[in-house]
Amino acid sequence: MKDNTEDKILVAAQKVFIEKGMDGARMQEIANEAGINKALLHYYFRSKQKLFEAIFKMVFSQIFPNLMELANANSPIDKRIATFIDKYISLLQKHAFLPTFILKEMNRDPKFLATIIKSSGINPPEIFAMLEREMNQGTIRRMDPRDLLINILSLSIFPFAAQPLFNIVLFNDDKAAYTQFLEARKNSIKEFVLNAILTKQ
Amino acid sequence: MKDNTEDKILVAAQKVFIEKGMDGARMQEIANEAGINKALLHYYFRSKQKLFEAIFKMVFSQIFPNLMELANANSPIDKRIATFIDKYISLLQKHAFLPTFILKEMNRDPKFLATIIKSSGINPPEIFAMLEREMNQGTIRRMDPRDLLINILSLSIFPFAAQPLFNIVLFNDDKAAYTQFLEARKNSIKEFVLNAILTKQ
DNA sequence: GTCTATATGGCGATAGAC
DNA sequence: GTCTATCGCCATATAGAC
Image (cartoon, rainbow over all chains, first blue to last red; front, side, top):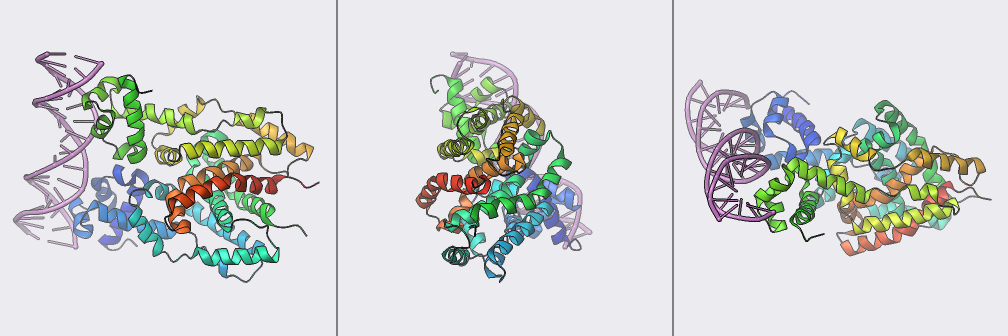
């Protein structure tokens, strides 16, 4: 992923766009980061806008959870939810700045965002149907399945998006402590969610 | 809040900065929005940076929850948490775009952020001490109090910050439906949190 | 305090040689 | 494909009249 020029540009552009955002990023800085000339950026991607869209698309597909795993597996619902949370937090740990980037740039162009989402292959109705089956069987409490999905995503993503705030407010700027806290949250979130939704027998 | 020129500038700047962000905002647009000349902005605030910092400070104090209500009241813990969630979601409904703005600009200057936070008068240790008392009394499950606080804030704030995404993915771009959903979440979040933490008698 | 006019610099984008 | 040089524009900021 760094051999040819195009890939070098993509790597450099992702770094700079994530750090500075679309408006704050400079084509010159991307060129420096890639070790090439500014004019080459336009040779490969025509405009800053096109380059940005390529990056946003890449990042979005990297960070959007594989929700389908929630729907398809055969194990019990609590197992599936626990596995999903575990995998998803691990993914966010590897790409801790991507949620902030997505949230930052999400409002820029609603139509473009819609296009990206459509082509990302997620199918919420299938997940909701599965959750409703579980509710009918009485394994989880009755609730709006959209709430449940949003809750799981909120609990997982928000602590990464608000990292600088929580890091200062709750951890006195101790970044290592916050990293450790996020690792422990894998289990903490699982317990919290399962306590909230599992019916007791 | 609109009589003198300085206030007109603050109102206009808040609107434009929230919509476009610090880097995307233009002093000319703020001047137009305020119905004054561009040079006046510099007369009152010296630079774009200073104007932005004034706005960020205002917005931050508007949106940061009055956490102390969680700690000080005399009613039972479940009542206090329920009231807090209710009030906080109502606040977010009135200022739906402020969370996105804060998250967007939070990483710009960590030292400035730290200053703002220090002067905001929140005192987490007091809240944690209160939560630990409840755990010792057995009214709520034993857990890391920081997790509980972060969970409540995540469940409340994230659906506003990720509004464009959820609106498309889950509500087919029907904004009224999403607004209604957020209203219903006041109760949904309460039930979710209380089920997760209350010990059954 | 408020305006018009302008200084000054930096940006995205292109032309054109190699 | 890759470079240097440059165009044309627009941004923040200031000077100076009223």
